Image (cartoon, rainbow, N blue to C red; front, top):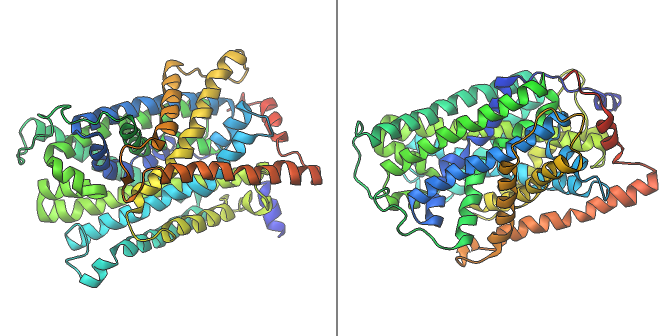
Length: 502
């Protein structure tokens, strides 16, 4: 127990530089989103050209959020990201928004995202190993239980990644960097392939994906809200490096470069890769491919060996890299919440191992939550359901954080720690989109979405936020008043903190 208490005083080591910081964002962004959402986006909006525009818009929107987070991250350069930003932007009543975000991030957003990725990389690996979209070529009985096989792969691999994150910061960052290089190579390969298809250097079956233009595009706002939700999931790593700012060597210099480099690189490669997918696969195949669109594309263009086996396995590792980055930062989010007192048993959740410098118990707790999300839902397509579920509270709080950054510019124009200023029209666009994405998912455009009632996933997301009021009251009022603890005192301490040497 003595070690556990000492672990609370262990300061995270600043080992993340520009490349590792960019890799942290890129590795989370380039995951299941880009390889699995383009199919669903087209099914919602009706035309590939509209889908391309949404992905381009997603890059611009994410850049607006990233600029605000750079401004806030340099002002408050500790691990925790949005949790700390909301606490400084909205300190009353008793850091409510910060607490609710932390609650949702721990029990819903991050664990749900890691769980959503599990079946996807499992699906791609099975596709590559057995030469087809499913297990029908292996054994009919296994094919009937393929959903649980994909989930089982997710559980085992998540356990291995969690153990690496527990064992070493250095090797965790190295693994994330290696997987980032791999996935960038895969995306670059698809991007070049798309260009070659467009100029006629690679011959493919003719399709009308581009000639149809915008004809047939949906005219329902709720359909675009659903589609933009999927697009934003593909870009969701734009905020990832903010959760590990406390481990950046020089946040003031490295955060703007790392965040911008990661987002611009990903946006360009996303658009080129999606152009490739839509150029090489017919409209009907795009819509029916679901999360294995990239495998369908590689199978058609590159044949049975490289296209049907090698590329799907590499894509699976690309998705794996996203989960690795999410697990790494999840431990930092939970430990940051433990250290400020938001969650009980801070001796455990806020604990960093004195020698390994890793948040051991926070990572273990995150693994348990991921397993629940992987194993609890009934058989079916849990990927799209989990994406819609976790995106709702995410956009709600990201919108509040970016709005707070804008408000801060006017209410505290001479803040001494503001060493970077975001171009306000971009954060304003981000806030407008966040409002759109928190309202329109409740408006019906079809009775069922991916086999579930259209309102189910956003309703569960909203319920998660509402339920958070209960632990907030119990922790920040009931328990705090009885023990004399002030779980918001750290906010003023950080406001007064000198960061001139960072």
